[in-house]
Length: 343
Image (cartoon, rainbow, N blue to C red; front, top):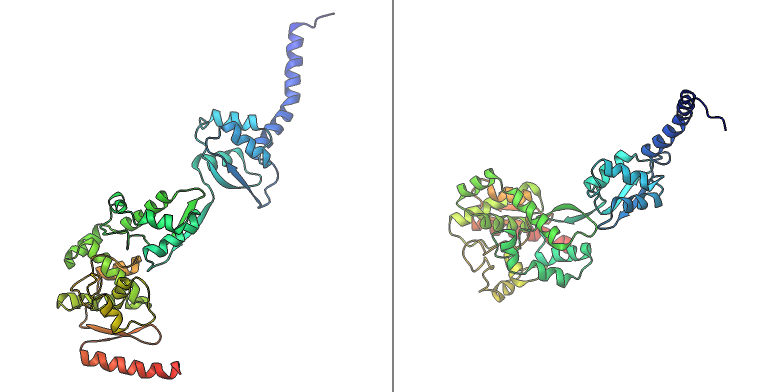
């Protein structure tokens, strides 16, 4: 066999490489840009715990998001991210590039599910929502929330977690455990307390627990937002005058269950209860529900007025009065207005 001159062989090799270059470029370009044409659709991808980059690449290949798992694995390793891919459930747009895929998997931008805790819930009601969210029994979740050591662990004033499960809509990834969720919820409460809030509480002569307790009463009393600071002002005036607060929601809390209408015999049935503000002086020992930010701000900045009474109107708003005579007149007038509607 006749050998080609060395120089000629080199030329042929270079020519072959040049001919293959467009093919190789097209191959790798398509691979790195992402498989398929972006059409707005998304693909759900579940990355298991402890998955190595090649295993993750296999998951992506199974969902037709990449062509070749080993090339993606090599790309991830060359970027120094072989051990940085996070487990979880992802929604990835079809046609995503390698750069996008790696960023999503590296940062753990997993799908999250909303959890809403409305204002004014008590711990047992929050437990019901958390139990449904994490897929556990209400009894188990309630036992966790009411364990006395939670107060110290989560650094709240106590005496329980009542009042410190901050109302808001949260988002968590699948599989996040109850302890992580509860820490996030209480953490959001603690984040409310900045330097300005603590200065304002000190100016009122109230500590953190007392502010939250007052705010929780306001939360349970008020349906109209513009009345929050006014109602807080009523209770503030009563505290300043050493008057009984006579807050119906605290009696409901002492009774342990809501009543459509609070009667004198209900109040008498829990006369010695520390949360009965018809018989016990000052604020109760702790919050009676979870107040939202608006009620907390109202407790920190009660309106400056002379009202010491209020009564609910038929539409949920309140009539505020300065004297017992004005208060009784307001009650009688509202009752007369209520009777035609009841009939």
